[in-house]
Image 1 (spheres, helix red, strand yellow):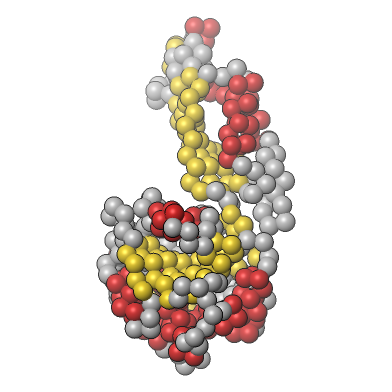
Image 2 (cartoon, rainbow, N blue to C red):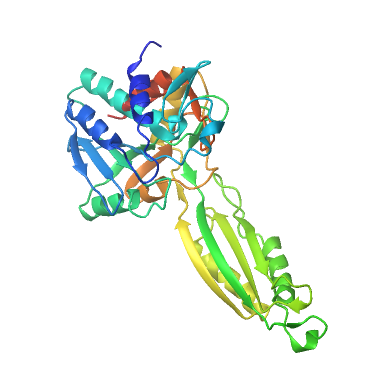
Length: 376
């Protein structure tokens, strides 16, 4: 494929050092470019986070591309083979921070829209882009706030593509049609500090918690379902003691996380944990943090069209997956009837020498364009 506009735009975006939550003018560049083909730009900024809602048309169905212009920090500059914010072509690949996650996808959103509108200026429906600069950071003032604002005024998305990098081996081999939720606990077990030679005068929180931990590790929280594996429980940190070998600690701090499927709820998981701790007679404090609810798009019109477009452009049969961490899809699904994630390879994301295959860039744009043609 000879299309080069996507590559050129990807380079322009990569050249802007938009380390989260700094947008560095990326969204303005998108607004200026899409404004030429009739998109109306609405800035929806909250705190230090820049967000933009770009829309062309006011009728249903609404097809939305969603993504983020912010990138993670570069890491040690001396480890990069070329400067991270100087997009570089080398050995058939485009290198630069954000190349895979996810400025190439955003560039392909734009070029797909440009070609589609040029060929179909009077299409039925609407196209939108929801772009934030706070996906790689705290995500407090980004997509979640935009979704709240859109919901408040009754806007509903029919089809949404989040451009997160999803390919494992080759472009188009994986479509994410859901993600697990993330629920973290910060648990403090209360004991009584004392001399290790006089345990009857102390209460060791490590000992009191051990049976409860064993039960939590052995618990089957759910069986998963057609799209999700069973919910997983993992301890990420345990800390207790004064550093001395002759002191029984007075407290034990435990940090743990659930990656949970739609077969469970955060309320149910919390209650189950409290029940285990209470049944073991443990004195404790427990603070919870829900980072994101699980979301799922059942195999349907959007996944069917995506698979057809991938087969047409890449000759690949795409698989549906719900693996990986969280994404902004967890917020958008509240106003989106169908939502998937579809983008380039995820092999180098957040790494030194982040890159995408040059041959994949026009193909990704062509996939997005084919989906627009099929759904609008």
